[in-house]
Image (cartoon, rainbow, N blue to C red):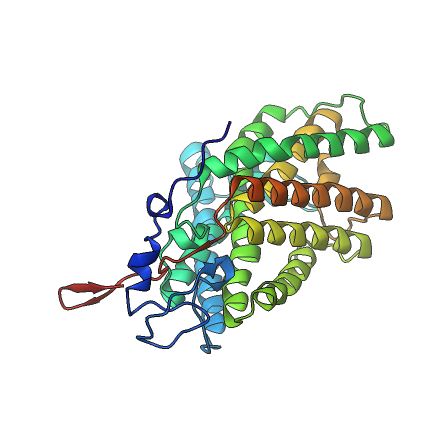
Length: 349
């Protein structure tokens, strides 16, 4: 049995009376300084953008700069490891970057770490441009709710397992074809694939929702506006322009955004994405098809695969929606998400 959620104070959010009595805090419905009116903020409304339309443009510049810088550090690290272990800086990089592209443990590790750089890049952009406290990039609770993530993983795991088993059964894929590099792949997957998934989610869900959504006052508009472009861009950047692949990935991205809306944080989306990628890679390592599991320019889809996505992701969204409502998962907050501003020796919130 899941224990009841602790009061807002223990989640890092000040009590209602504390926030409402603070004249420097204003919610999205009343942003005038010193108004003294506090409004509950959902996840997309946390940056308190108001009419500062220029901030998303500044934020995307910082996001890209931080991501490129951190990715360069990752590539340099690969070269350093190659030099220290083999005396050749290009040893691991040559194994990762081949022509034509072949999925190897080195390539998977390099891709995962570069995509994982999206996590700190999103935090850096939120801090520099919006002054958000780091925890509020994770959720309205002001932190990443690990307990919630674990319970959602247990809730959604059967859906993904059943979906993949049915698809493989229909395609006659239950013939073992174990990849000889399975141990190296599994180490990379266990250690870095959840980080890769989180990196994509923080960029395409967190950044878009809080930067575009924060511009709008009406809650439905605040969520609808960023979900559409973020889902389309997420699909397009995977490389394949095949219509069914684009539809499939767009639906997956939209499902992730919807459960962020319902749970007030990134935990559910990270779990959804991680379960999908980790399970697919595990199955292909045992039964073959690893190369085809990764979307590339040559990838093609089908109406059947889209229907599987509609059913499986629709079921995941419905389960999360039902479970979050039943458990009373926090989806908004009265806490001021901004970093306190120092004036002399007084900290003003």
